[in-house]
Image (tube, rainbow, N blue to C red; front, side, top):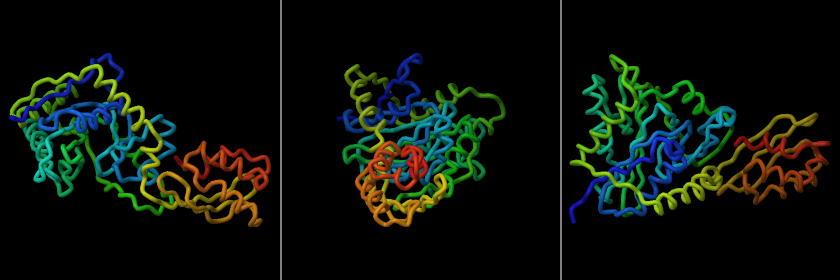
Length: 340
């Protein structure tokens, strides 16, 4: 059977799914796992502000949690590896879902070659570095990542066209939180927007159209492929059940140890918390009192709990936190020891 190439048609401009990062990540995975694996599918989308972390990363090491929380910027884990990236309305995302071929693993030419061809036509001299990023004069404008299901390969990348680079740098500027983790850290690089390298103004829509045409031409042409309502419902279910879930976005982080210390009221605390599969495995240190029995009770209440603010607050309440810190708010203390 001859391989066919399709565009996955985006929702209408008035459809709230259009800039929804949970739906867009779910759409990639749905196409990879449920559409005919003999064909290739091209997806193009733009997200509202979001931080997307790699499959094997720990958000505690990748983001400025205070900033993202204050700005309402969600943090979502994708199925592919690689580093953390910031998306907003000035960032174009391109995804290629193709049949599995061993020689295509760790090969990103299907993404990078058409992009570089477009940039060169626009007068931008771009090149691919050793990490398969696209750079212009030492500044990164595009990152890539890949995931294989065994039947298909998802190859996707970002294109910084007119993104808010100040927001990008702040969101990805993780404070020096003392985390000991097996997670894969991001490789930080100086970044730039394509729009800043052009001789005249070009709208994002025109740039996206050029990339779309180049991707189609690289694959010998592509036909539209609208999804049925039942398929969109399946994508929405995947977004809701997986990509909106704390268990995937945070709990999926590799095993780590984090140290939290400071003062709570009139007493000091110094805790080392070990977390695996999103749940507290062990707690060491002192918590405002030299009383070992009180510390053991509090530690026992934490073990097995999810390392998230509401679960930790419940554990502190049940573990007698108010007997250590008089009139203490369990939620306020949980916010100190649980950064995200």
